[in-house]
Amino acid sequence: QVQLVESGGGLVQAGGSLRLSCAASGSIFRLNTMGWYRQAPGKQRDLVAGITSTGIRNYADSVKGRFTISRDNAKNTVYLQMNSLKPEDTAVYYCRLGPIVDARGSYDYWGQGTQVTVSS
Image 1 (cartoon, rainbow, N blue to C red):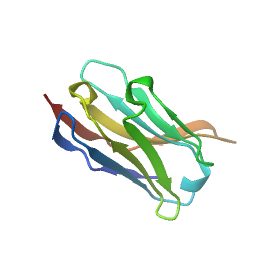
Image 2: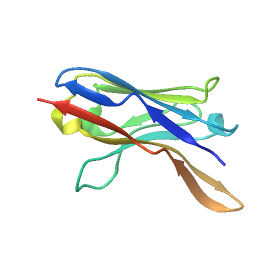
Image 3: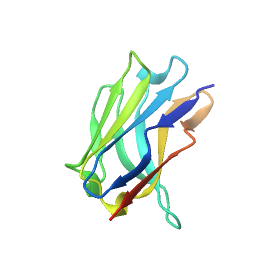
Image 4: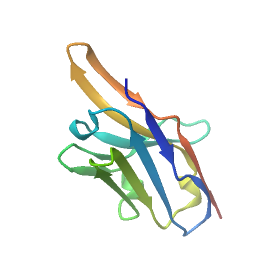
């Protein structure tokens, strides 16, 4: 069983920065894609940024040039550096490990989420 624990959320003024962290338990972290997602009230959960096991990154258009995803396999941790924050970045941010595809099928793991609030 894998557990993901996010931290680093909070309240920040527009233009400010936050760094989110997601620490994973277990030994499969380094083998899998990690992603950050966010969900604002009344909206669906959307991908913000992802990073593969080999370090290939992708970003939502809305955060390109402002957010940076990185991972430290030695610490089983993925980060999201968020700069130039905007009020529209306000959401609960979730960490995801996966998808994992094996004999059990396709599945993934999610963290509990961390609130990011950007004031104007």
